[in-house]
Image (cartoon, rainbow, N blue to C red; front, side):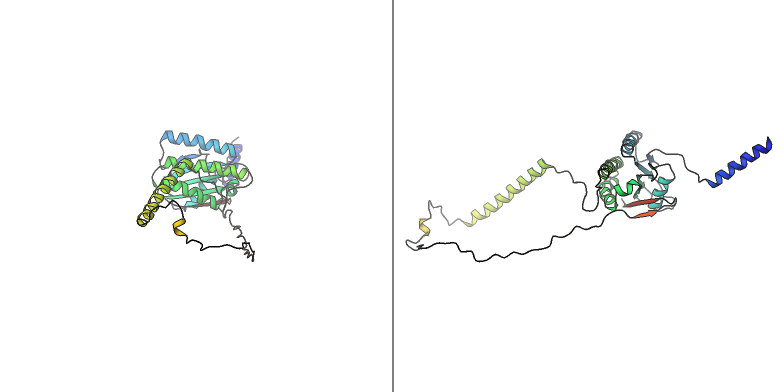
Length: 264
């Protein structure tokens, strides 16, 4: 019995040495920098869970106080890989990392996320998230990230993912812009007509054009239209750039990731 126990213990030790240790699965919101209230964190988690289930791709938000000596890219990739995130065999998903140490942000994409959120897409999302991060409105920043991920995934599922030259259209405030245009046009028109009226003080209104025509000075005896020639210039239509897509790299786990980020 004692020998059997020793054999089982030896097998357990061998198994522990050959199989890499995996951390316990974490929720899709990990707020280690404590940037959100409990209520905000719960609301954000619910939204991320719904988006992830809808698109079969994890959408994760992580905040930390320090990167522990790693680059933002390495920290984000490793956090995603070693904490149980990812759908399917290609571990599809996207993670937003915010580090308060040097005010870094990084978006890491994996599997389906690489094609759905390209390099141009990461720049687009960053342009809309970073202003909120800079202002300290972290809750709005993370909800904006979640909403955009939902939109980008939905578009990718349709077969034509957003990429260079093909990005979401910004909402157009019809009423507001129309009012601004009318006010600006009215002001410009009033200024222009005021200047013209000031230059015509010596001119009086006339009921007809007779005072400006010399009697019998114009006699038309023959009239016809004569076409002389036509000149056509052709210019080649500029072709759209074929650039786009995602540059990828391998993380410490050996998985392929896309990504991008910066400072806030």
